[in-house]
Every structure is written in C-alpha cells, then in structure tokens.
Image (cartoon, rainbow, N blue to C red; front, side, top):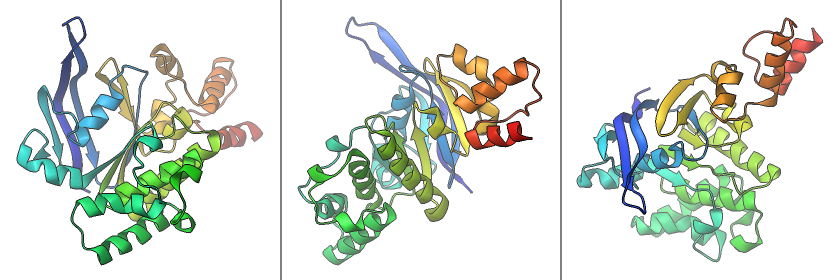
Length: 277
C-alpha cells in the first residue's frame, strides 16, 4: 500500500478578529496509506477540521506541505487531481444536497466533471447501491432521515470516484440510528471497496472501529496508534479533555482496583468476555 496522504511539518495560521495570529495547525507530520481507515480525534479547537480541509486543498498550508498521492496541494496545477482523489463529506448533509430528487443530487458532481450521460447513470446506480439507498433514488431528499441524507451525500461524493473519503464529523447532527447507518456504510466502503477513509469524530465509539487513531490537541500532534493502544491510555486522554469508550474506562478502573483485567479492552464485547472468565 502506497502513501495517499502525507503532511510534512504542516502549519496553518490565520488572523483573528483582533489582528492576532492564531496557529490552527503546528508542524503536523502524518502519513495515511491507501486502504487505511484512520480516525482523527481531539477536543474542539484541536485542529481536526482544519486538517481535514487541507487533504482536499480547501485550505492551503501557511508552512510545510500537504501531499496527495505525492502531489503538493500548494501547486495550483495539482488542484484538479487532488480533488479527484479526495472526496469530502461534511457535518450537515443539508448543506451538501443541492437537488430536489435523490438521483439528480448524486448526478450533480459527475455532471460538473463533464462525464457523458450514460456513464453518469451507471455511476449514480452504483453509488446509491454502495450506500444502500437504491430504493430511494426517486425520493425528495427532504423526505429522508438525517442518516439517509448523509448516505446520499456520501453517494454524491462516490459518484466522482475518489480513492479517498475524508469525513468531517459526519454524524455530529444525527441521532444514534443515523450515526450507526453512516458508520456502517463508511466501514463497508473501506473494507469491501478499498476506499481510504479519514474519519474525524468526537464520538469515541466510532473511533474504536478504525485501523488507527490520531490524537490532536491545540493544533499539535499528540499520539497515534491502534485503537486498543490509544484508548488504553484512559487518564491521559481524559486529561486532554477527551472521552474514552466506557468499556476502556471500566477496565482501567477494575485494574486499578486490583481486578486482573487484561490491557487493550476497548469494546463492550471484549469487557464481557474478560469479566465472564
């Protein structure tokens, strides 16, 4: 697997209302390989969303560089290829849905790319099937639930055939059922279709499902590793102002109390198995 996204000492600064400089990203070094599912976590203001926008060249570095398939996002001639490679899904599906009928919305991106109509129809059919929304292609988006709308938004990005999906808190505005729908869809796209996923979230139970978790704080890189490794550092994450999965916290408390619970427990099922022994 090659590198699909890479940041080298990536910095992003902007001017606040009072004219002072705010450092949103401070020398971030991160590599994401093709086919990976990486979750990025951190409290509000940690730089998660700012980083996400660099992967798609919606923001450009003020220092260092961001590379997409080896192409620097700072070079204007690379912009087309960068955005063909990396598709973005945002928090509010209502802001991404532009048409009055689901299939027209999914066709919007390919139409703007100048894809021939027959090919667009194929892409729309495939994209809706991939997110489990084929039965809704003639529906009005306003009739859909939040989770369904977000799946249509994902289909609209998939119809442009990106090899990487960057999702910026895609379930923040959804109820638990909608959150589950979206996470299940994204996980399947990663595991079955091989699409690289960068998933920004403040729900730790979503981050647990990733291959790797990256932790940011105040625009700086804190740590990264497999979920079992990162979420076992319960006190450290809580000191950063982050939640940890409930199972990880209970396991840590039991260990502190002298109960021989193994390290690396982060899901309810793992905790049940450990305790039933």
